[in-house]
Amino acid sequence: MKLPKLELPKYTCILPYSNKTVEYRPYTVKEERIIAMSTAGDDKDSMRDAITQVIENCASVDTKALHEVDFETIFLKLISASVSPIQDINVAIQCIGCGVHAEVETKASLDNVEVHGMDELKKNYTRKTGYWVIDLDGGIGLMVSPVMFDGDDDEFLFKSTVGIFDNETVHSDFTKEEFFEWIEALPKKEFTKIQKFFDMQPYTYLGIKVNCPNCGAENTTAIT
Image (cartoon, rainbow, N blue to C red; front, side):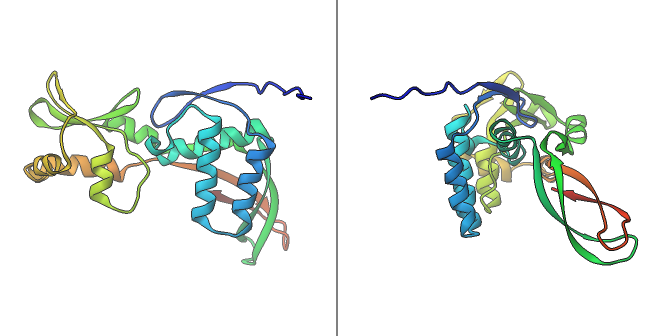
């Protein structure tokens, strides 16, 4: 006998970094177990792989092309849609009142997660849907969409570059060798503009207020 299946609701959100609109659905019990199994061993790589798998199952995104802020944002959206935006968490504090170190259990709303650093980035660079523009002198510049950082700065820069433009002409079909030959020929002042962009990357931030269990003083801490 073929049992009936519930139709999962669909939602959309705009990713804060790429400005792309993505569709997603709540994760299922099976997918929740994938996450739960990965957290049992406290292996960060396994946890990351499990979360990546669930995001790819539930959302219309290529995780390899996501900035960390967008990766975290879509996962938080999945938790909110699948479980609840209100989550029980433990936070560690050193009380500003009595100085005691304590771990406090509290509740936090995922709806209160903010992205810090975006305003400053948008003041200095132009954001298009799917990429950012780094303007250099002479009408030349880069179109970049930073991906997940894998520990290799050169590889990260190359994979993050969507294209190089010269006024109205966009060059996107180039090898890694051609790309770094072009980078190494840049004046230091122009390369600094590229470095500054990657140094200014935003991050997710959740401010939490808790009372010290020892003296009752209110403490503010943050999860980033």
